Length: 309
Image (cartoon, rainbow, N blue to C red):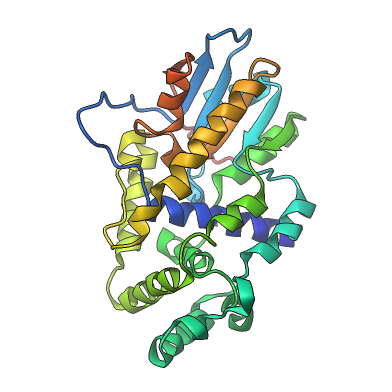
């Protein structure tokens, strides 16, 4: 089971990093979404409502709560959908090979000798999941995402998806994924490895001062705890290059998910748990569902005061 938890953490970190680097920018004067992490989907021929919840893929243990209204939604609906099937250990294992760079590329092929040594020393000192000899063969955005754990500012970080998964299994709900893990891993083949490696070097070099990614992470946690979906959507990469991949990392996936949900929700009521950054903005899941004719309204969501982990 330990390997399963490690794999799910890695997948969560990847998407968290994508959210930090390519958040949904709000443009124009569109009406902002109400503040809530939980949304009810009804209308457009649905006989039972479904629910959409915005997760954060890494949060300090003391802040990891499931609100009563989310617990109720999980209990009432037929299935629980995540971005990927969090309960499929075999799929996780099979997808792990897709995290490696193609053509036997390693970090040493992408960086100068000095930058490579800086990253190597940093990763050997910081990483406890995998040896550097393995990490240097993985796509650099994956390596960067592993470093994000230290940005949480706490001893133990928790994936909200893991808590929801446990609740779903407790209620004997079938677990599904909106996309496969191999697909998620393949996304990073469309972003130049060298660009990814340069972002990794930037992160490492900023360790002496609070890095921009760490600052953004702290602001993201604050926005999440205040249930400000639109604020979560404002985080956008200021560095040149990665900001050009918003369609690849977020918007195309949002559109694909909505089309899939259109075929799922008439047959089964579902609770959908995806990264909160996917909900915000004109290209976010909420407004895309509304454009398809669904009524999507916020549900009063109060985080539980007692610990659930």
